[in-house]
Length: 153
Image (cartoon, rainbow, N blue to C red):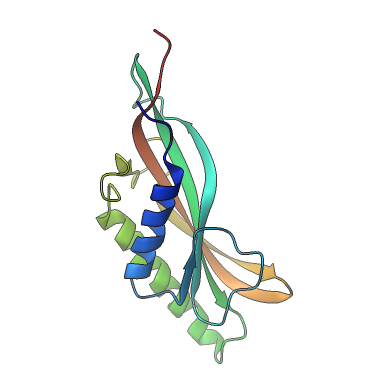
C-alpha cells in the first residue's frame, strides 16, 4: 500500500488540459490574482473520501475529487463569443479526461458515470477575481484510486 500521491495526479490533470491546446495557461492551484484575457484553467483538490463500493476488507480505495475551473474574461470583444469559447475548452477537457481514463496508470479511473456518487461533470457560473468579472465553467473530476490505505489486521 502507498499513501495518496496527490501531486503526480494534479500534474497529469494539468498536462492533459495543456495538451488540448484550448488553454492559454493552466495552473495546478486556484489563482489568487485575476487570470489573463485568454482561456485559463486551474485545478485543485476538493475532497477525498473512502470509495465504499470499491474498498475491501484489507485496504481502502479512495475517491479523490478535484475541481478544474475554466476562466474567460467577461470583457471579451463580443459577449456572443464568451460561452462558445469557454464551452469548447470545457468540452475538450471532458474529452481528455474521458480518454486519459487512468491518467497514465496513476489512478484506477476517472469516475465518468459517478459509480462512487460523483460523475465527471461541468457547471457554469460567474466569478469576480480581484475586481475582474469572469465567466467560468467548473469541471468536477472524480477519480478512484485503488488500495491507498491498509486496514487494521
